[in-house]
Amino acid sequence: MKTIKLNNGVEMPMLGYGVFLVSPEECERCVLDAISVGYRLIDTAQAYYNEEGVGAAISKCGVPRNELFLTTKVWISNAGEANAARSIDESLHKLKTDYVDLLLIHQPFGDYYGTYRALEKAYKEGKARAIGLSNFYDARFVDLVENMEVKPAVLQLETHVFSQQRKMRELIKDYGTQLMAWGPLAQGTDGIFTNKTLKAIGDKYGKTNAQVALKFLLNEGIVAIPKSTHKERMASNLAIDDFKLSEEDMETIRKMDTGKLKVDFNDPAMAKYLINYDKNFNPNK
Image 1 (cartoon, rainbow, N blue to C red):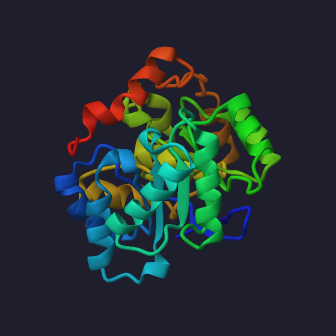
Image 2: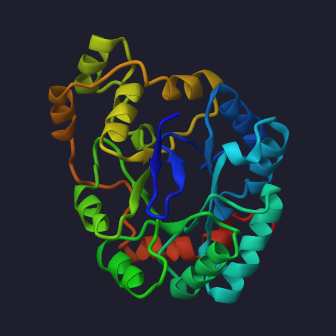
């Protein structure tokens, strides 16, 4: 598995497995399948309500903990220094581990300054090997980073061939922050699996559209965390080390960038939805 070195020296796998929208009931099985086919980076979050499933899987998988790279994220309802600190300990308990490899703030809402202070403390105490942000854009990213001691190692954003995050990639360079793509296959939209441009490139190498799209991101230096509940697709997404995209291929795919996102976190309606997400979707409330 290819890795990339974060700004604090921690090595992070370039390709991982995400469990967004994987139900708590099937999460353990999916993560065990993912680890069995070769994934070592597993990405979850408090708001996915499946940290217990991930924890059960990593405790049963037979792979030493230090060979796995585990990511989770602090949700809006746990914002603020004290609340976030408590929730981090709860996440560690659910994940059956003493530390996570990467700890992120999930959304730029609520008291995320206090939350980041809790992340910094967790980092200094060894509860997280690296910390960072998710869904922070432009000025909000810069304002937080300029006012905090520990610079974020990772920024997780919606990133795929149709939205390649060129502006944000340039912005975060100054901080040594690594881009991590959620929804790297555009969540199956925009005909990505049948796109003629990707298919023409894939046909040259005997690869699928998904494999070409993921290979492109990795070539651009972007970490990706595709999700599937099917073991054969997990394996297929991982099988991209045996071919190379030419510079011509890369330039062709770069031209597919529309700059348009599926989710706009600057939309007030989206902010209200996310702030109330916990009340509406947490099965324990």
